[in-house]
Image (spheres, rainbow, N blue to C red):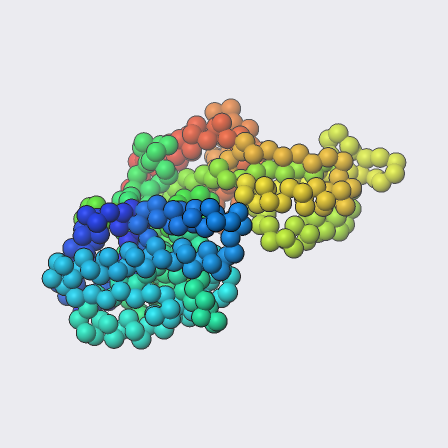
Length: 416
């Protein structure tokens, strides 16, 4: 008998009919000879509705109370799913985060899981019941309800699978799996049958929205095979697993893009040791995450008699962070003697990802050549062992994604 964790997202439980469909799927898996643990998200749109109620009461709701409110969405979905399984002739019990004892830190609205006590889940299974666990939530050491951030039910599912030693974690969603890029932008995008944890982690961090980043991190750490598949089809989806030599035969696996980037440029800071360290130390102290960084000699201010050589320091932050941090960024710029601060929110980060980059030479040159052929200017570049990202003007998003997808033959090369 196998032990399987199945997670169903908000669209999968978005109506009573869809919850009934989930119940039938869970029972079919159990009747095939498996122990089944189900993780459910809130019904689609419910979390936004609940949070909007809090904002109607006060402009800045306390985060502890926000978590207490938001967690009720998953509580309702878990109980309804349990009832639907019972109505189909099965046995099920709903369990909340504090009942399972999903222990988290105390960072409300973005808590991280510390430990999971699987005892209650195991005893539920031993009674022949399907355990229906509310995703997205946990409890801190003070007994307060916490939530894991947007997409947190993915993290709940993989973490529970790791804690109870499940053979696989199935993530049911409204797409058929992981694609080579967004099919909405590139019609030739192809479903990937198998992808490594590392590649999925990069794609998730670069804008792909199929899996939450932290869920992939946990899957990789505890070697939990993850199967991303559609709630509305029995077709196999995409397996996210450890790498093997077959995965390295293709140089590029997918193309991702992120429109949530904003560029900040400090013009004419003093070009001397310690200045850049001061800039990014100050920014980090405000919990502002910086992505791409470039330092270059200032074209307009090559040097001056008072202070010597000058440089331009460019970096990217999320648009949400920029709104919050603009006044502070201006203070930092003044403190390091920048002559001007420039902002640009009309940008997009376009990236290619693939394990094969480790062994295939010339991938970066090919990427730059493809963009150049389309007349797309690259404003910044960042790389890792298995990814290359370029910052370009947002008006070129679709053109860049399609050109890179076609240029690397992603529509043609099956990946199994």
